[in-house]
Image (cartoon, rainbow, N blue to C red; front, side):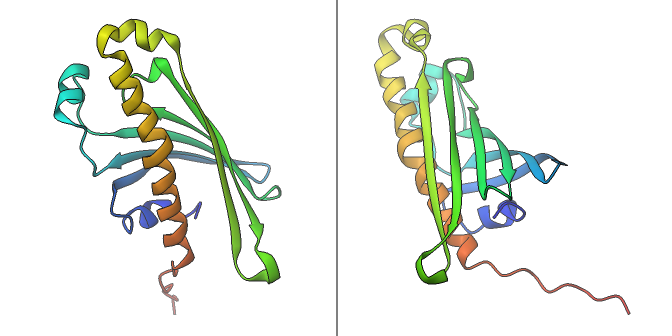
Length: 160
């Protein structure tokens, strides 16, 4: 999943693209920064109010193979100064060794400054942001995990 996320994203209907921006490794821990683009459109009324286009976000991951976990943060493509989202994904052997159990847990913090900055439309926008964080992102994570379960590495070319 970690090493083929961009290819896995191509297999998920809601994802337009996942682009890896950075990758580094230190002491067995892999740090990756990805940019996600969603196919879903923002409702016209919200797009006009916020002067935004597509749904995008940057995720910053810290993959620890020894702990079999990934700590992550998400920076939304809009209103990032008012929204904080972070969490952890853990990977464990499933019962009876029949695959991998994946646990996804996160936290969303919408700062009170968002309501103040948006005035009367604040509750509408807050509801929209909560919808993205509580339904779209988890649904896409599940779809990526399911795509990973059926993913086969392309055959390697053997130089002769």
